[in-house]
Image (tube, rainbow, N blue to C red):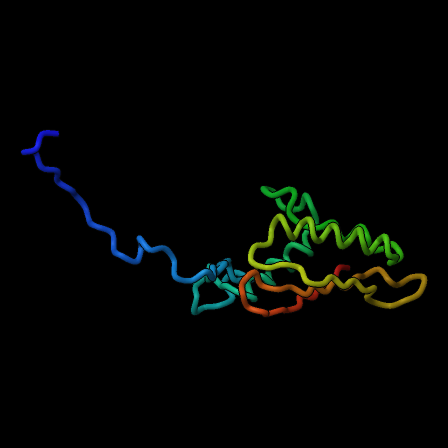
Length: 154
């Protein structure tokens, strides 16, 4: 460029805070509030964040069988196949692996702290065909907040 030419800048100069980067390391994870249309103040597709969203997402993940969702065939856990099996250490490890695999692929914002599985329902030769799964979860933030999600598989 020659010394007598000038350069014109069009547009707007970005503010200082966008150049410095984020000031907080906490990232909120947002999702739909279920069931849809349940909160009139937020509208039909209201959004939630935090523990409420993660708790609903985990319940949906555990209660959905793989292949049940049309556009997400790998979404869910195959926990119903363990209903009529005796709850031994090897069955518990299989359930735990099934939950961890699905959790790592589909849940954002939380980590598994503890997995508990119990037979649920009447005991005896005709009973015992239900499982209670209790997950203790911690948020992926600096908070030390741990919460439980309880699901009955029958």
